Length: 152
Image (spheres, rainbow, N blue to C red):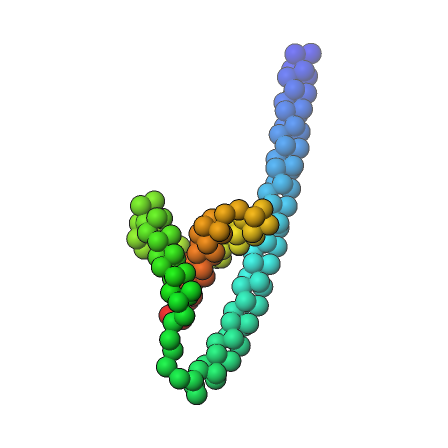
């Protein structure tokens, strides 16, 4: 009788383990499938953005071909200085060119996060200084992505 109980206990234990493994395997499969869908969506979005950028670059090149020498607008110069100040603020945390080793998709995800922060600042009527800093964060990440893509 002891042998029978021991054998039944072993079968129960194996059955329980198989069930747990099956559930775990199903979870991994679902997680992998979800990750794959997210990756495909991100890649499709990046591809669309790239195609739009290429069209915009061609249009800009066509417009600039006959244009006079470029003079930087005073408000743009002020914003460029803000971009540099924000970059220097982050230098102490990440190093001067720490973003150079960051994958473009990671930079793109961070860009989307910063766009959300800028939108939040605008919608909540935060101070103009905060809006300017958030806008500089967005511009800096766009710059980093453009630089990493070899377009600068």
